[in-house]
Figure 1 (cartoon, rainbow, N blue to C red):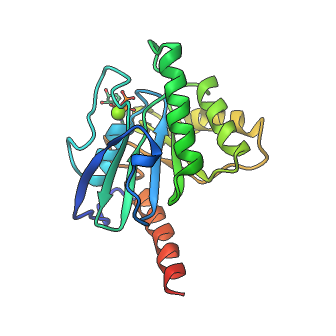
Figure 2: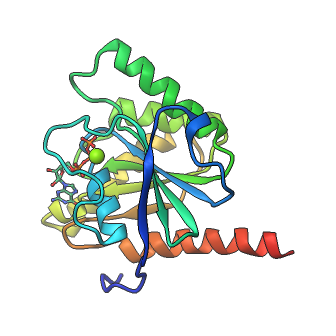
Figure 3: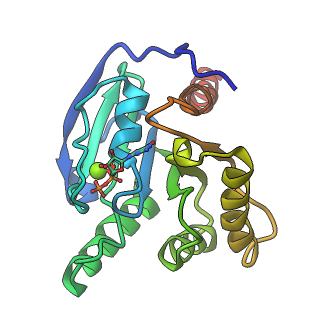
Length: 211
Ligand code: GTP
Ligand code: MG
């Protein structure tokens, strides 16, 4: 595992915030969605990937991102920051809005390559995460798991055990696990692996278009 920076994203442009799929950019660039429980470290991860300190707002107060945010990366792909779920003070109305907006985006976005579901590696498996993961699986939607804030584990065996507990919880409903990444916006762990994975998928799209 290396933390040195190999992938440099030159142009990162915030395109806009949308709450309906109809308003999202319609060009054919591949999209990658980032989603997870509120406060899981999504904005921090987006800033790590793009190497921009303040691209996505980082907050100690959960529930900041309420819209579908599109970032164009090097005119070749879109990073899509989706609102977080499971915010403690979330009202029924907010939850219903989240469900409608995020689920319909994931089901219908035409160029969505895959989603990254962020899960905090420091907390035991959470019902809300599992039900969302199960829903993705039931819908046959492609996704990866991203275990966040791995720098917080002081010992490697604790990190391993915590991640295994989450994996086991997923395996209670599914026979296989999706691709997985461990990341830290503090130590930069996982950045290169994740960007390499995205680059690999982008290359498949280019290959297909050239055929
Ligand atoms: P919302 O947009 O509010 O849903 O949260 P978010 O998922 O975007 O989380 P955000 O990146 O704002 O981070 C939430 C808190 O966790 C902040 O206090 C961050 O500093 C902290 N945090 C995020 N990533 C990491 C990490 O990799 N390591 C550590 N130690 N702390 C992190
Ligand atoms: Mg955020």
